Image 1 (cartoon, rainbow, N blue to C red):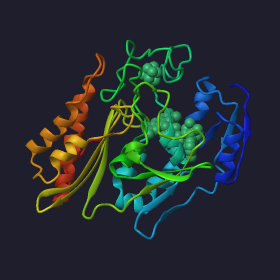
Image 2 (cartoon, rainbow, N blue to C red; image 1 turned 30 degrees about the vertical axis):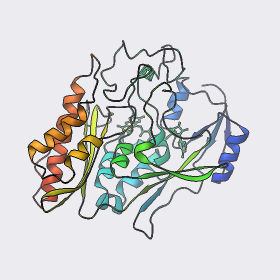
Image 3 (tube, helix red, strand yellow; image 1 turned 90 degrees about the vertical axis):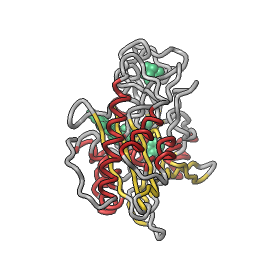
Image 4 (cartoon, rainbow, N blue to C red; image 1 turned 135 degrees about the horizontal axis):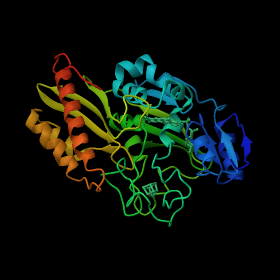
Length: 339
Ligand SMILES: Cc1cc2nc3c(=O)[nH]c(=O)nc-3n(C[C@H](O)[C@H](O)[C@H](O)COP(=O)(O)OP(=O)(O)OC[C@H]3O[C@@H](n4cnc5c(N)ncnc54)[C@H](O)[C@@H]3O)c2cc1C
Ligand code: SF4
């Protein structure tokens, strides 16, 4: 690992001021992703700004019923909080489906959102990669790309975003709170926080240089809504999603009053399924209607030679998830589910 300077600010203002005087520094959360990338030579910051001493560890309900989880809250603490378990099961399930208990104890909410892709060519500095080194090419396109994107990819990058948590946040209409010394605080919808690769795959998110994720805000759930997260992967645990889905549903007199669907493992960002949601909203959600809605969303998929299976996988996950929520929202017991 290359030598680097190490700073330990104790306030958000000091952290962004430290970035201003050391541009190009990297922020450090739990380090479970960043330190690995530094060991592989993928990230070579001259300065690391450790955020773990910032006062960003609160998880609290706001007067309007929203839940505010600060960026330093661990993945474990967020997943097991009683309000998260009861009001936002999709978020709790997504977090608990990721990594391992030890990693979740250390990994932070901010770091989870900003973890980098698991594309093996990105992690191997001997291979061309437009994300790691713009203009060098994409080794995955003609290489092994079984795990890569089927939606929204570009000629420059076909990587997927790895976070399970981010998929649940997108479906739950969460917002990401950001701070920098120049612009102050702003909020970005979780579904718009990560980018598609386009011509600039080196930019994963809409974060400005030096900006810090300070919190995640979850609005009160839609009245009567139910939610869940389903993930398909090569192993039953300790594996990233091949495809996943977060779904939220509320019914009124047998018709869909509210639905939100987001896919993970399919694109460079959590993929909010707007076409499917539009077809489902106001409809009686029969099997046929659900199938047509999910098919309409996945019609946009452009699979690569090695990953066409992901489209069927995502279709089945989404139909299964919606069927389970429809049963639950109708007051029926859930059908048995094999994870
Ligand atoms: C073996 C293994 C298996 C895994 N499996 C899964 C899985 O199945 N699903 C899943 O979702 N994840 C999985 N992960 C990833 C894990 O969830 C992430 O490594 C973790 O969430 C990152 O959080 P961190 O706090 O350690 O981030 P760090 O490693 O500290 O940082 C990650 C990035 O975020 C930036 N950053 C950190 N905090 C902030 C902030 N507040 N503001 C701005 N930038 C910030 C850092 O600069 C860095 O670029 C796995 C990891 C490992 C090692
Ligand atoms: S898919 Fe993206 S991250 Fe992977 S090698 Fe290509 S450019 Fe790099």
